Length: 134
Image 1 (cartoon, rainbow, N blue to C red):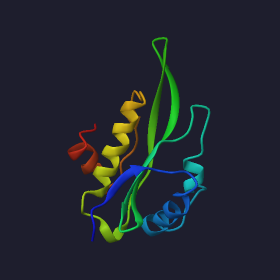
Image 2 (cartoon, rainbow, N blue to C red):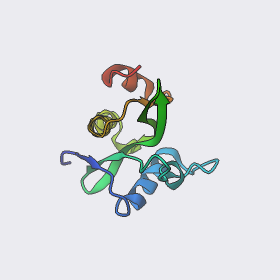
Image 3 (cartoon, helix red, strand yellow):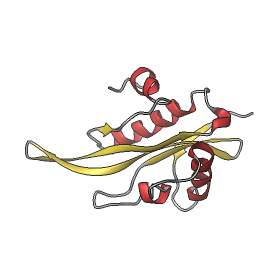
């Protein structure tokens, strides 16, 4: 097995592979929460996303839905973390954390003021531990 490559999601090219990864990670989408719906561009712009590729296939994904906000009269941009997933066949190898780090570095370069989200049992320890989020 080769080393994983962490990179930005490429719209159009990566969509089918992320949809397959969603199926392997979560099963069927429920309540309309398809990958396309979660990451549709809105008034604040396109949704930044990162992926991990291993041996020619996508095995991890992280992304944010973008939101504009105003605080004390200043406008800014933030993100809501959604759709984080790692292929069950490669979990436990640190791919989620490294994919998220790639995404968070991009968000910092692009001037995002914050990333918010709700962790599940699989990701809470990673967010509050290795990623240093609270």
